[in-house]
Length: 512
Image (tube, rainbow, N blue to C red):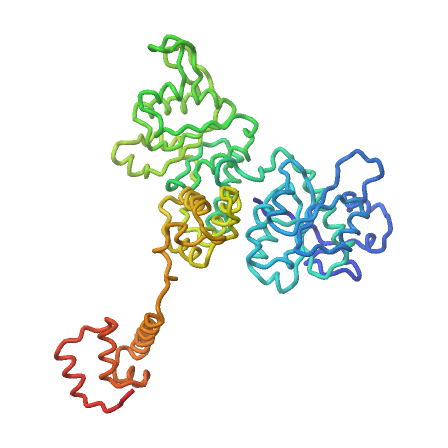
């Protein structure tokens, strides 16, 4: 994601809708084809007949698209594709095709905006936002406009204004290197989806570290998506055309790890019938991910440190050193500071690997992202079930927030996929997620509901009056004796024989 540039201020257009702090040149407003107008809005002019140049595609996203605006844009040479939902938009956005975009934020409910964000973040689309003054008061809407849109206009707005702005946005995105644009989605089962501040910080960090050649260390719990982050860094770096080679240091037997990393020559050991290129050499020119680096044995740590210092490898059984140009990204869920204190990990290797550090937030710290991810996973895998699953029950959403998620995003994917298959209804319940005991929305009898309400009322009265029983009883319009009895029933006070005697001795004659 990025914070998109905006247009510079120009003269206002008479009769046009509000344009934030920017407007149109007078030449465009008057319809004159002066040299200045042509310079400012070259991209907004209709393509000449038979022009074989760049096709001007425009994505228009709105619950109810404005047909007059579509007709005007088509008359100006735009090829307009409309989408009425986030799902339709996701199918239209292509990672290798630059285009302009109009998103009518006023036409969508606030709860639908999170679904649009994945498409809005694509850098190959130059977005212009349409919104009302009331909608722009919402902080989430302002964040979407600020981070993903070239500009915005307040409704109502003249069609000519929109045409000019999308032309400028289209011109800007065509200046970018299309190969540098991030893909629509990352590889793997899960995509990098998130709107919380922790994920926004992660996205900003990825953009920064991708532009360097320094080694990166990714720290985070199991299942948070460390490999996805490493892949995102690689795909946004100058090495994106070269291989991305991951290796799980904890999944390979220790006696085979050396040969997997550095390869071997023919005859190096029994069974070595031909030369084998190791993972480090296979990643030459690209990126090598050393996942679970905390599980690397000490002898392999020494070999890796030597490679990092010299930039050369020596295959097992070989006598020649081979130079390798590779960027190292390492990741682990192990606390390497503790491992270094215990002598299980070399401090000099850690400082070589951890030039830049990226911390993956756990799922439990991502707030609203939990629900967004659950819906995203449901949409991705809903075809696993013959039944048409439409969403989650309120109790399921409550359970998603109450659960601690020790397995993080990987566990969420597994639970939602299992629920898609096992659900008996069109809405996934907390039972389907196997999280029924993490929701308070349990069925209860009318008598149980009355008891719960009575207990809450007594607790509130005692809190208001700082446990002064006479005042609390008066507030509840009951006698002090009755209050004592009810407190005992609800476990709010241990009633001893002395307490009961003192209560009745008060001689309070007030009755319910």
